[in-house]
Length: 430
Ligand SMILES: O=C(O)[C@H]1O[C@H](OP(=O)(O)OP(=O)(O)OC[C@H]2O[C@@H](n3ccc(=O)[nH]c3=O)[C@H](O)[C@@H]2O)[C@H](O)[C@@H](O)[C@H]1O
Image (cartoon, helix red, strand yellow):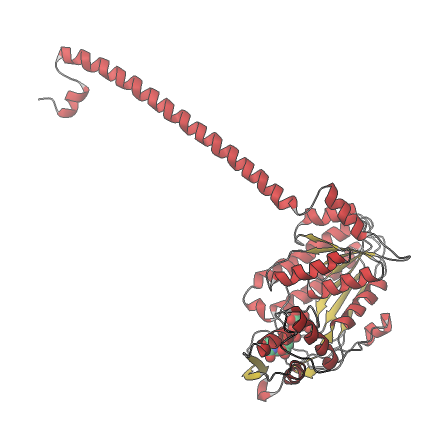
């Protein structure tokens, strides 16, 4: 007896066979037509998705490049870079909407130098503060390009458009303790970004002189005081410090191989108006005003931590002095033509103050008592104290800090109250 399968495939009745055969042919024909139809549909869908993907990619790349490029953009860059004084310089300021970057950009513009800013507006801290600083820069005719140090095409384009005489490199991943949370961001900005920038500078023709922000943190566990540039810097206490120290070595190689004039500035805990919200003086102010407790770290045996807090205006003078005395790069188009200056300077205040005294001063200016919560310094990258010897910077370009912590914090508090709208609630001690 034929099986059901056999019956379906090979029917035993001849008449039935005929009908079934024609049915099968019909079915086959129908099946092949519908298969073709399905294939056609599939191909149409594939083509449509490919086309829409292409247009998405196109629009995406347009979006990515929309923030820079084009005739209008180049015009803005050129206009911003124009020098308005005899003997002036034309400076690319990276990190231009950062704390130090915004102050330096304004000071350069004020004396008639050309300034073009570059900033990636990352969200390490409230980007609205960076946008507010940018508005200030725009109001003084400074154009800030939105882009990342790691965008080599953008950097090359900037140098195609303007023959910058100097680069003031202040863009960085700052903060000592944040390195525990996001170590890669330090490598991205402070190592990869720095190398990318130096690659562009080395290839530029003419090469600019480069002044950049190193950090007092490179002294790490150094105990010799005050800290001099020739002291040990091989014991970093944080990844931040390690990347800044690496930056000093990296810039040295670019000076040595390509003839780039390099100046590294070791900033000592810079503070002031328009400052960085992640820093202690800033976050303490916020908490004190909001009635929240503040955490004050203490070293071993309850020893207070101390910092050589340096006011922003003094740092700006140091930056301008460094730019003016930078010397010239000797290479061009990637070829060294002779030796160029390689310098490193401390920019500090030379008088360390303990953290509890910093809080005393804030309380006085804010007229509000802080709720102090003392804890032992966690092993998160902090160092017990910093203290700058600034004789090299004084000798080379007359660096002389003039603002003590009391005066500087008074200016900071005045700005803070005004910026965050506290003016009507708190009165400053005059
Ligand atoms: O000169 C530098 O090279 C660095 O300066 C700055 O680092 P620091 O000197 O660590 O400043 P900052 O955080 O204001 O802490 C100040 C003091 O308050 C203590 N501190 C801090 C936070 C807290 O909650 N409690 C506390 O006691 C803390 O233990 C410390 O004793 C920059 O952030 C850094 O980017 C880099 O530029």
